[in-house]
Image (cartoon, rainbow, N blue to C red; front, side):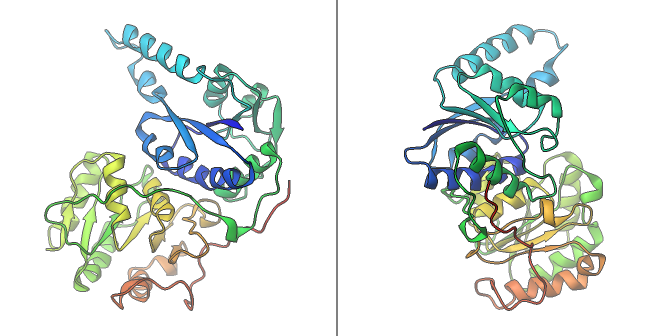
Length: 348
C-alpha cells in the first residue's frame, strides 16, 4: 500500500497525526507512506519509520513572499520542484488529514484517489469537494482520535482502543548545550496566542521550585517577546539557561534528553508526549479534552491542568513535586488529579 499523507501544519497537528500512521502501519501489510508537510516541521515525519519520503512544502514562506521584488522567479522554480516531487509516484490513496482548502488543493496535485474529512468534520467545508471519499470524525473528539478515526475508515480497519495508541517516533540524538545541567526540565512558556499563556509571575514561582530541587531549567523561545520573557525568568535562577534559537531537530534532541517538560498549549508539548516524556500541560484557555497532551498508555504521566484552582502556582508546584520531587522517574498511577480522559475505541 502506497499512501500519501497531507498534514502540513502546525507542529502540534503534525504530531497528532503520528498515532494514526503508526496504527495504519500495524494494520495494513506493506504500508509505506510519503508525507507532505511544511518545511519547518519536516523533521517530525522523518523520525517515523513508516515514512518513506518527506515532501516539504513552503506555502507559508511563499505566501509571505508575495509582492516582494525578486522572489517570483524563485517561487515559481520552487513550486515546480514541489509539484514534481508530489507527482513522482502514483498512490493507492491520497489522504488529506488537514481538511483545509490549501491542503485539498495540494491533494489535487497528487496522482491517486483522494480521501478526507466529510462536511461537518473538515474545518473548511469547501475542501470536501476535492475528495472522492469522505469520512466523518466528530470535531468534539481529541485531534489524535479524529486522525486515527479518519485514517482507519479510509484504509478499512477498525480503530483500536486507547491502549493501542503509539506515536512510533525514533527519538533524535540528544542535543548537548553548554551551561545546561545534565538533569534538566524544558519549560515551554511561549505560545501563539496570548490567552493561552501562563502568567509570568506564576512561571517565576514554579521555576524557583524546580531550581530548588537541583534541576536545570531550559527556556526555549520563538520570537523576541518570548526571548525577553525567558531572560527575565532566568535572571534570578542560576540553573536556568535561555536557549539560543534552535531548529526543530535540535529542540527535539533537547526535549528527548530532558527529565521532563512543563508547558502551555504549544506544539513542542505534544512532541514531548511523542517522546514519552513526563510533565505538566498548562491550559488556561483551551480544553484539554480536545487539545491536551496525550501520553501513551504505558508512558510516564502527563498531567493536564486547566481549572483556575489547578493552575494556581501552589497547585502546580504540588503536582510537580508529586511527579519529580523524589528524584526518580515520574509516577504513572496513584495520583489524585486525573490526566486527560481518553476516548474509547470507535469502529468505523
